[in-house]
Length: 291
Image 1 (cartoon, rainbow, N blue to C red):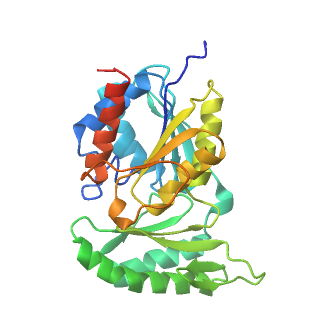
Image 2: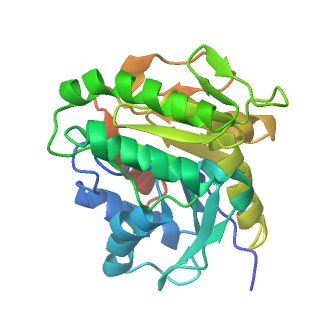
């Protein structure tokens, strides 16, 4: 197969820029249409997310397949911040690979699940689709203020569970090392969830895995854009910048604070979340004259 030049590469967080943080679905139809147009132009597109493979299959890949993904596309999913990965084709999600080395013992998983059921089920739910990390998420019928008021108590209780099982864990500025003095796990709260995960997992890890995958199918573009709604999403652009690419990061929730970086940071005017993500994709579809 000839090595066709790629004009652009995209590393996309899902919650926020692609899926609405309110509905947890792709609520803006133009996002699906523009992703298909960009994929058809040989733009490598990776979804790099803390979400599970099941979520990406159902809420992202399914609408893309239904709308008609093109043959020969370069599309990849890196879930649970690098613990799970798979290719994406016109037929859907390919073989899912799981890094079992970063997974939690079943006893810890079960105890956190029980904690949610007994004390926090009125505001949050245990994500049963995760395969390596533990995630507890805001119920969609609960407003943000109510969830955020309950979240700190859950975080404290979950921290205590992990520590009690002898696993080194960090939460905010607190650490409880394991017997060897190591702290291999952390709690990472977001505006809609708390992830309990290996410290080796993050968006730069996912970016590295995506670039390695794309390199197997041809040359990589020099121009890259990463898009996200949290401060950790900047790590995707950090990795690209360190690797020498022409990169800018699109922050779709700049109110949380724009980070100082040696590459451009883009905001989409007054637009935020998936409205900003849709405007960004539309810009590149027009710039590449794909419509």
